[in-house]
Image (cartoon, rainbow, N blue to C red):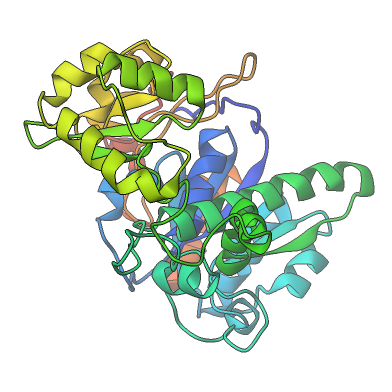
Length: 399
């Protein structure tokens, strides 16, 4: 197999990803989508939470996998050899684990002073909870983001793991890595990025906490402008059991929406006391037609009304289809790389693979050690040859 040619604005950037779950892999996927050469270091004996087999996990796309026994001194040495040749390292262990394994920040930066060392955790590297276990729902709870989400009179609603793992976690890790890479160009020095989901989630809340502090956002969930409290920013059921989303915040958009719906003599939308009655009127009208009928009426207007599209149907939505927001890559439908670039265009490369599929070819390509001796010693593991795996091709689909 010929070596894949990297595309995108990060072409030429080398990243070592110490495999984990959730936000770390998503951050590595994003860097790979943007063109970085990302090597995923998997454990020789896989463990922990695995929602999907790695060769079917789209978040493992775009990078080669090597399998390393991290508790073997020679295996830890392989990681350090990769670090010496890398621009970025990403790890998501609990604080202190990387240090105990022999490749903490001090050791890695001594080997490669220009290294950007990205650390992804829920609680952060310090603080009373730093060494405790947790998941997305716990981090967003403590950060203050879960309590405001939900209907009035109901419990907080879990926004899947989009808010914590991926928005407050992965995206802030990637922003930190990219900022540190830019700074290293002038200073010649790397640094450590402490990306904590609690920090990123709190930062995402900036507008809402600001509104709350000045008295423009109530502590009572489901009673505010953007949390389903306002009837002109909500979702409504249609006659076929589907839903329409309404975001007619501005008066001109609201006027267009009510005009299309032929709603007259409505209560004053600026009076919160009238909101229950206004919601009833809007809900009753939406219930008269199917989602498809309403979508056709609102499409292309400024009413800020759109159908709530199920995930399985989203790739076929006319707008997303026209933009190529989703692509089918080697038989799997998935979101294309984002954002888009006018000159350094991105493309999907390698499909996900099982741990250790590329151990031999990757170590050889990066010039790391005596590969045969490392395999024989058990420090690294090579799965069946990647060159014989038809799924591991260099074919690329442009978004």
